[in-house]
Structures are given as C-alpha cells and as structure tokens.
Image 1 (cartoon, helix red, strand yellow):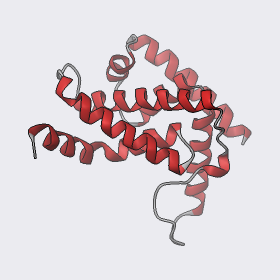
Image 2: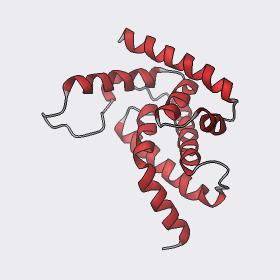
Image 3: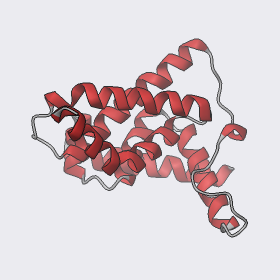
Length: 165
C-alpha cells in the first residue's frame, strides 16, 4: 500500500461520519447517497496529493465533500430527479430501543435541511461539523463576517422550514 493510500485510509476513517452527514444533508435517496459517497471518496483520494496544509485536513476534506455534493445536486436537478421526504432514511440502528422523539426531531431537521437552497445547506453543514467561522470562510472563499451573516440567515430559514412541517 502506497503512502497516498495510507493517508487516504486514515483520513477516511477519521472523517467518514462527517462525510456521511454531508451526504445525507444533500441527498435523500439511499442509492444516490451511496453514489455521492463514492464520488466524494474518489475526489478526496485524487486530491490528497494537492493538500498544502494551509487549512486543517478536516476543513480540506469537508470542502471537497460539499463541492462534490453541490455538483451532485446540480446534476440530478438538470436530469429532473425529484426528492421526496418519504425517501429519507435516518442513520443509526432501527432497534425498538431507539428514542422515537429524537428520531422524529432528527428526521424533521434533516428534511428541513434538504429543502434549503444549496448555499444555506452548505454553510449549515460546515457549521454542524464543528468548523469555526474562520474555517468555514476558508472553505467557502468568503469573509468571516459573511459567514456570520449567511449562517444566521440559514439558521432562520431552517427554523422556518422545520416549523412548517
């Protein structure tokens, strides 16, 4: 196994849960989630040699994930694939022990997130992954002040969408 493969495997193991959340925030259909996850994995593997360490590896990988997700959504929007809330599958086990109320809140939040415009999904997704305003600004190529404004607008929009459900 080459050095690039070891770096990729290590990074993928560390950030695969975050990438899965990114995928679910952009794509509701399970089969297309798998396709998007594979597309992101390939893009990360291909771009790791270009990582210049100007940002954290997490920021770099999540930027790639969000950019691929945006391309994915645009592709299927052009092709006319429609998403419905019935197609949403929650992560985690489906045991009877699972807390129903938490599951319902998660489902409403995920469904609401998927209804937002891509720009709002992107900034909320990065914030939900714990990136700082500086890291989000770097990932999106905007100012830190703009991150604050966009994030507040996205949170308000999400709250409004979720309350209407």
